[in-house]
Image (spheres, rainbow, N blue to C red):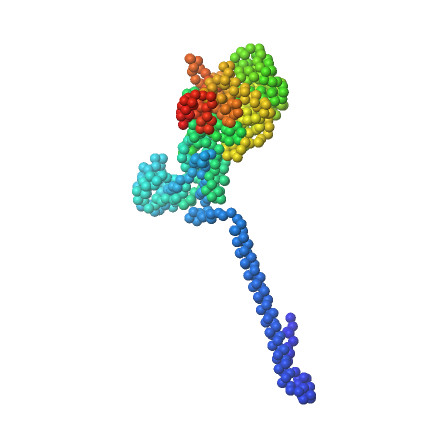
Amino acid sequence: MSEPRRIALRPLARILDARQKGENPDAIERENLRLRHEQQRDKLRQRAESRLFVMAVCFFAAFSAVAFKMSVLATSEPAEPSVATSGSSIISTRADIVDREGRVLATNLVTNALYVHPHELIDPAAAAEGLAAIFDDLDADMLLRRFSSGSRFMWIRGSISPEQQQLVHDLGEPGLLFGPREMRLYPNGAVAAHVLGGARFGEQAVNAAEILGVAGVEAEFDAELRDPNRNGQPLELSLDLTVQAAVEEVLAGGMTLMNAQGASAVLMDAHTGEVISLASLPDFDPNQRPRPLLEGDPSLSPLFNRAIQGVYELGSTYKLFTVAQALEEGLVNSETMIDTQGPLRMAGFNINDFHDYGPRLSVHDVLVRSSNIGTARLAQMIGPERQQDFLGRLGLLEAIDFDMIEARQGRPIYPSNWGQLSTMTISYGHGISATQLHLAAAYATMVNGGTRVTPTLQRQAGPQLGERIISEETSALLREMLRAVVRDEEGTANLAEIPGYEVGGKTGSADKPNPQGGYYEDRVIATFASVFPANDPDYVLVVTLDEPSISVLGETRRTAGWTAVPVAAEVIRRVAPLLGLAPQDIDPEVAYRLSSSSQ
């Protein structure tokens, strides 16, 4: 770049010219000096203006960023700032779980972990002996070997009680240290254990530990429960704690009385699908969750949830679906006479009834008296394709999308080749297996007016408006038939008649499959699917007993009418007042005694 042209202060040509004209040559120098100063001034002004412009742009950008951030904060929801515990990134918070009335089912308890710095122990042998005396499952020799391994840090306990903490403190060892953290607490012990599931410690630091759900709703809603943005908002379930406790108490007594290997029950709202109670026995205390079985039959573990993991043949409870489809499709009416002459032979197999009901029964009596032959005749009219489609629309051929991770394991089992023989046996609940939860949902659909209901553990704002499966007229007929099963002397569930409460339902007794093949001759799965109040059911209750057996008048009884039915009746008698259902058409004094005994 060339140098700018400079103006000489005293140019010789102009000076000579000025002298000839008689002018002062010094004026030329002053003029040139003035021009030079003006050029320098203009250059400096331009430079200053550029710098001011750049500074103005920077200030504008900074204030704009501040203004934008303030507007975002002003329009967003207020939230408490999250603070890490002692600099740890571990999320140690976990929301409570409460029942439909806000009663606590699971919460957190502030406690301490116990760890050791072996290099800081004054007397490692005494410390090992002292810890072994405090904690029964610790061995002093094993601890001493660990202390002498050269490690500078080791965990002793993820959580300890205040009493244990004081005993450890009294040992006086500076190398035994405590780390604060929260642990999961289930204040009701084993009540609703299978629903809640349980939790364990995940990632741990000295001053914090994350809590992870391992089963039940704790695992299903793990992300939501650990979300810091919940701001302490608990997870509200549809369960009722008092009803759950009553159901478990009656079920445990019934299991003992009926000499059953296991028992389970599902109580749900027939309109909203809300599960009010879900129980499985034997159970466990989630505060001390046992380890899963590593071998053998998993159903023998107390961790096994019979209500949603147990896939069983549910026997004659399926007859309701066969009758419902035949009525809905106009193949019969409730008074149509059906041939029940037995045995009914099909593809080399004989279908028989438990009793001889004579040559003909009405459709109404086929269900009330539980005729296998009559139900199979109805299934012949329906056919395999239509039967499979109907059961599929009821949700009986797929796992239920339920609020527990275990529900995914409860996948129904049915024949891959759904032929005529399968159609007939499936009509009365043999050759097809499902869970109690499937059965409860299907019965709710049958009696609530005919719209499909999906079970849920979350509170609902109102009735579910699912797909219509049957008409309201068909649903009304089914309610009358279920009521007759309990009310009539010929019904298979007359032991479920409760003073003041109209109960309807259907029994089912299915031979238990033998793992070696075939079925046991003296072991059954006994089920009673009940609805109440029968004229306009609000609730569905399904009770199942595994291998029940009771002696009546010197004779061994295993069928549902003698085992599951009386247990379910006692459950209804206990929980109906808790659900706000007052006894009807009963002496006031008797009603008061019934209500008082249920408290």
